[in-house]
Amino acid sequence: MGTRTGDVGWGRYWGSATVALMVASIASSWILGCSLQDRACTLIGCWNRVTLSGSIPSEARELAVRVCQGDACQDVELDVNPTSDGTDPGACVTLGSQSTGSVCALSTTSSTRRIQAQIDLKPEGGTNYSLTVRDRASNETLLDDSGVPTFNETYPNGKECDVTPCRSGTLDFE
Image 1 (cartoon, rainbow, N blue to C red):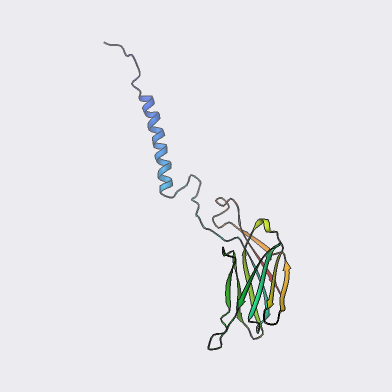
Image 2: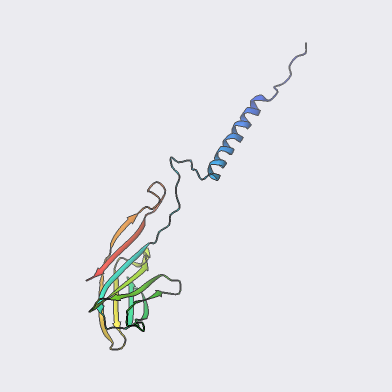
């Protein structure tokens, strides 16, 4: 009988096969939408925004609105025109060229109109917000107030998946 001079390589074969099996398992779990965590994470997005609101007299129709976060302010003009049948639908405009928020003059009650501004939250902008509304026809200031919003933090995908929370704040000038 002959003598055996070398290993046939089965140990190397099984080691390579195990690595290939592990790689295939990981790849298939990613393809099927599973994760290596206990549960899969969704990719639900959210807005980091602040909503400012207040009331003005309903007869004001040509409005100049200034919305500020700290020293960073945005100015818009908003015209509220009733429809031909006399109903008041309200009006909205976007803030900034990149649509960093919106300002709406909501439909009216008999004596007041709600103004609502939503702006993107900028961490470097500070925590003080202000809303100023002026009637362009009379140059009368209808609303001029500032304050610190109440913030809520949410994790739409769960705390296990979201590294940072989504923040939304509200401030009602009443």
